[in-house]
Image 1 (tube, helix red, strand yellow):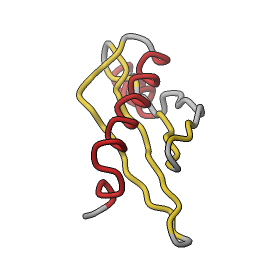
Image 2 (image 1 turned 30 degrees about the vertical axis):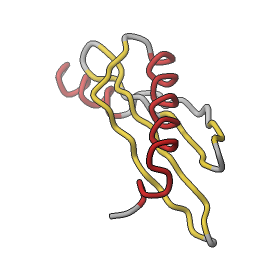
Image 3 (image 1 turned 120 degrees about the horizontal axis):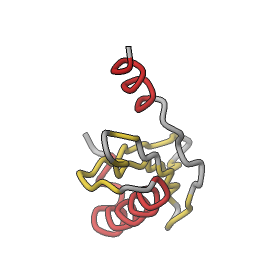
Image 4 (image 1 turned 135 degrees about the vertical axis):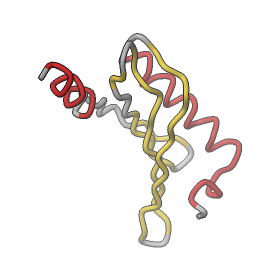
Length: 91
């Protein structure tokens, strides 16, 4: 039962609500608790022509602290915005 509890806990890990505005984009860090650390994840959104464009950023980097993971996710998201801009929304 502890394994199930652990898996459920990692799925519903507290998400940081600290949204960051950057060059017209909104970055919402959402690190997840996995094993011994926190993942580097963020949701990047952009409002364009009445539509909300969304990209889920996931990186292999992990952090031992949730706040550090959130800061790293914002940094990685800003870099992605600088490097590829709206191309990240193409499928």
